[in-house]
Image (cartoon, rainbow, N blue to C red; front, side, top):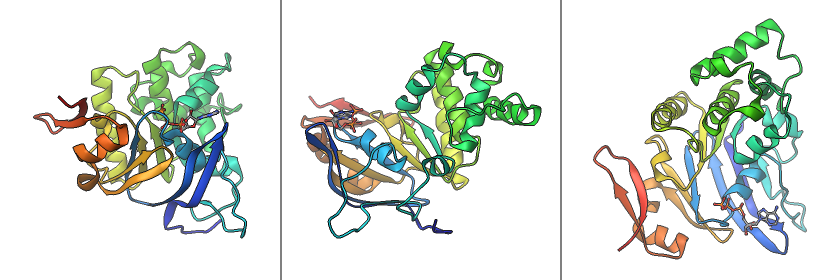
Length: 268
Ligand SMILES: Nc1ncnc2c1ncn2[C@@H]1O[C@H](COP(=O)(O)OP(=O)(O)OP(=O)(O)O)[C@@H](O)[C@H]1O
């Protein structure tokens, strides 16, 4: 692995086929480390596939000339576990995978992050348990440590996933609709915490439909449409009614509330 990579992700005409169609279609995209980025786009535009490319859950078509279509943290070959050990991941897919394992405790789920694994079999080790507890505490979820992950409510499970994502001080935090399932207070606390994490130097990549999740630290937005990049630039240049309407194939409008929070609504 490159020891001091400049970029979290580099895509060179990356194509991912799913079923009969291209979920990502010859995508060129670079996300430098330190550039907090939101990925927006309509249902089916390729946002989750892009995240899965980053975490090596899906693979691109090879280029005939041997060029690497995807580099993550400077490298095009990765042992999946060691890569995931460097990323903090909060996705619906991970949540669903964890829920299929009925005996896993929340504490073991959190501790698993450092191994890039689903869970850590040594999670009962007192030192490790104390560290997992501290991570859960930061998400106001220490009381869940011994609960079985599969039995948690949506919001409780989300807190545990966030604790897991932060457990091992990752280089980047990949968040797919991170506040889904959280109540209004927990959502506000989460947004504050995500902002602080970004300021402390962890690169944020946020996939969302909810503009209110775009904390001010996110200065860059990538807009996907049908597996291609429609726009990629500074937040204020990309978050326009015209570009978003193009992305959603319908007239939409950005609303800014008095406290600066953004929301996307249908125009008219
Ligand atoms: N496992 C799969 N098998 C076949 N097609 C798939 C699979 N997963 C995704 N796709 C297709 O790939 C395209 C991109 O899907 P993806 O999940 O990346 O979109 P998305 O932007 O994350 O959508 P959403 O906002 O609905 O979550 C869609 O057309 C989708 O139907």
